[in-house]
Length: 214
Image 1 (cartoon, rainbow, N blue to C red):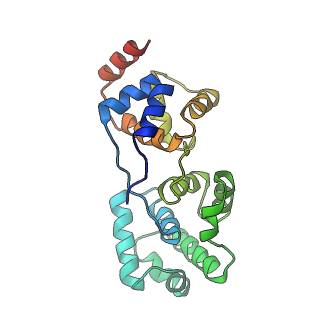
Image 2: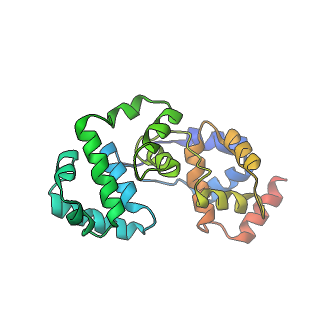
């Protein structure tokens, strides 16, 4: 399943920020896959920290082969060394087993996250071992499908913003001004800032776009 959004969000962002609107027109609709199962998503994100997506999927397949099905019960009962040998660090293996044990015992209610406000959900997720604020925000975006996630902790988003506006440096105040401008559809704005950072438009195209909207 893909993150749910429509032309309504694109029109809103284009009206609020003509420069971002130019990027939206040039790039077109961006489909981003989301995970629906919160438990699996948390485990996936912890595994995927500081490794490539291909490596993450390799580790995940090995974990599935080891456990049969990755659930709070199977993961909590697994041997930490065996989990580590799926291709992750001992620390990550310990983190995901600790998370599984917390879910199984009821200490952490993954489904309760769905009813929480964004800031409350980030706080709850960040309290887990191995989950920082950035990972929590990515879980809000790519699992809980929250509409207004624009992570200052994401280097790709910051670089995309700087490329878009032609900034050589960026203050937190500038970032927050953009966040306010994009709200309540910061998540969709994030997709296009990642695209800009990834080279979806050349520097020449961005310069021309900036000149057109002046």
